[in-house]
Length: 49
Length: 235
Image 1 (cartoon, rainbow over the protein chains, first blue to last red):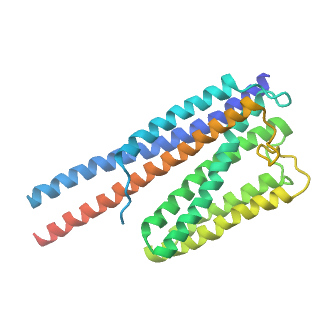
Image 2 (image 1 turned 45 degrees about the horizontal axis):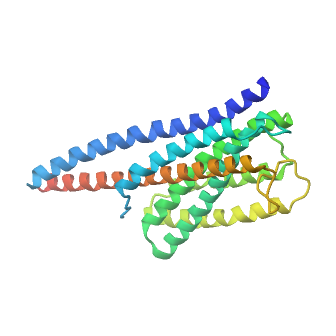
Image 3 (image 1 turned 30 degrees about the vertical axis):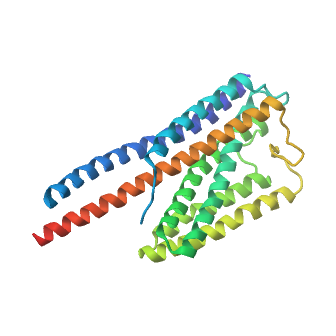
C-alpha cells in the first residue's frame, strides 16, 4: 500500500511541479511586461499631450 | 495583429479552473472507489489519461489553427497554433512522466518499447518537439509562420492516424480507459474521470487564454517602443 501511495504522490507531484513552474515563469514575466507597458504608455501620452 | 482577449474571461476562467481542479482532486481521493485490481495506483489514471487526451486534442487544434492561418494569412492564427502546440508539449511531458511512474509500479519497468500506445505517444510528442526548433530556425517572420503552419498541419494529421493504428494493433498491455463498449470504469469512477477531464480542458483553455493575453501585451509593448523611438528620432 505504501509502495502504491509513493507512486501516486510522485505522479501528482510531477503535475503540480509542472503547473507551478509554468505559472511561476509566466505570471511574473506578464506582470513586469504590463508594468513596463504602463510606464511607456504614460511616457508616450506625456510626449503627445 | 489583433488578439482579442476579454478581461472578464481572464478573471472568470482561472477561478473556474481552480475550482474544478480542487473538485477533481476531491473526487479522485475522497469519492472514487479504489480499483479492485490496481488499488491506489489506478488513481494515476485520473491525471494521466485526461492530460493525454487534452494534449493530443491540443496538437489537433494547433493543426486546425494552422489551416486557418494558411487560408487567411492572418498571423493571429499562426500564433494561436504555436501556443496550442507549445501547451500540448508541456502536457505531453506530464503524460510521459506520469505514465512512466505508473508503468514502473504496475509493470516493473519505466518504459516498454513493444507497447504501441506508449511508443506512438512518444513519436507524436517527438514530432511536435521538432516544431519549435524548425520555427525558430527561420528568421523571416512570414516564412517562419508559413513553414510552421505546414508542419503543424502534417503533425496534426498524424495524431488521429496514429490513434487508429494503435487501436487496430493487437496484443495490448496498456489498459483501455475509454472504449466503444463503455470502458473499464464503474459509475463513480466514470464521474471522477469526467470531472478530471473537464478540469484538464479548463486548465488548457485558461493557459491558452493567458498566453494569448501575454503575447498581446508583448506586441503592444513593441508597438509603443517603436512609437517612442520614432518620436525621439524626429526630435
